Length: 196
Image 1 (tube, helix red, strand yellow):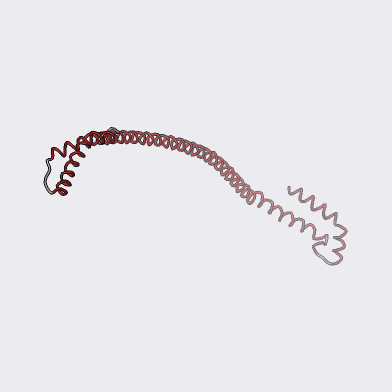
Image 2: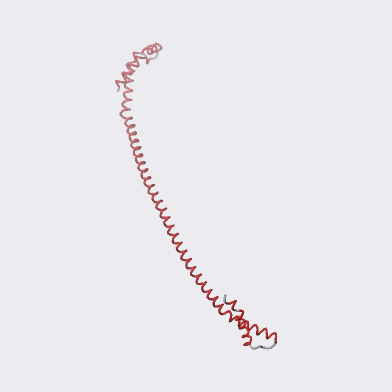
């Protein structure tokens, strides 16, 4: 490597020889040919030391540092790829959990709805039965009232007629005669009201 630099140095010196001789006449000592050997020596020594320092001390540290960074970057890439795969796996698991939860929620909603509808239908049937029983009781009471109504009406009519006649005539009249007249009238006219 040093020989290579030395050859380049000589080549450039010969190439610029014309300019060198022109500079020598102007009085530039570094271009004076009698100082060239010492300059080449110091140039070779300086660049040789620089080369040794660079190749043995600085460049190995730089290359080790670059290798370390390259390995760290590679490890980071591998870790990122691993985390990406884990994230994708977790995302799939979460999506499955969400899907199962939705299906479970739909199932629970459907079961709850069916149960509520059953309860409503049972309560409706129970209420219908109670209403039907109440209607039957009311019809029975109405029929009983219809059957007992003529007797009560006759009794009320007898009492009212007796009071009215007592107030009109001023004397009490026998209830049996009033009762016979009311019964006769109710048999004639009352059947058309109570048979319905």
